[in-house]
Image (cartoon, rainbow, N blue to C red; front, side):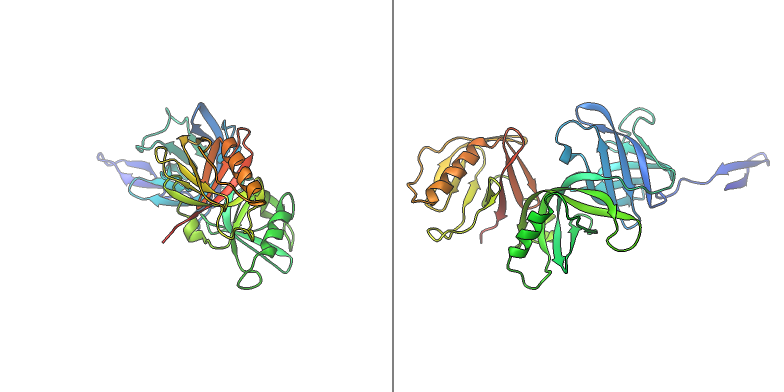
Length: 344
């Protein structure tokens, strides 16, 4: 629509409608975004009116599971800026150029590239992209139906019975729960992909479980939304080499790792005394030195202690999702999953 206004000399002048305060949603926006270590990466941003978003990046070097994001958005009305919160400290900023165009901004609120280098555009339709990412949320299973509520967005999805799903279901059913079908916090490497609807025609986005990290009965989404710090932290070892660490009759206590910072070193236990050593961290790289001495443990605690020692010796990278720490070897394979415990 055009609005006719009188110019200063009396002749009518056509003035375009003002830029809308926010984009017209739901919609999928496609284009390019800046990325570390490369000129640009193609991307798709899916926005919904309820304040949730999905972001798919293609061709970003490095860990593929760190490429895609889900989260929540809000508008900064004073700056006509869309703020995307995907679990990072600083939000991704997008300027609303018009209802068809979003422009990537840097941390200072300036265009991230020259001209329209990093614009995402839409034709007004929504076609949700498939995502690959680490997922953290509440898992429920009842009457042969499994669902997953993602923590950051609060969205609920059906869980497809494929890939590593059976491991998740088996572990869930083995837990002591307050009631059948009670939700339990789960974390895993997974995907959001289109699958046929369980009931009715058409397709819907479903959760795919690629690799189970663990179930955390004592946690909730509220706690998982805050990320634990790596150092100055007591970490209870939940899994070693893919196997759950269960209490043994010889030692019902925790298997744990205490990280006191680079200079403070670490203290660890397999349930039969403690041993200490030093470790180094640079970004997501980590390395543990062998302890000067180790306690003499009876069998089977001796085997568990050796597994813990071998795990720390092989660890090369780390990642924290909520209150869960994972250690990985040089090939990127998961060695251990640990849960932050806050002592009183």
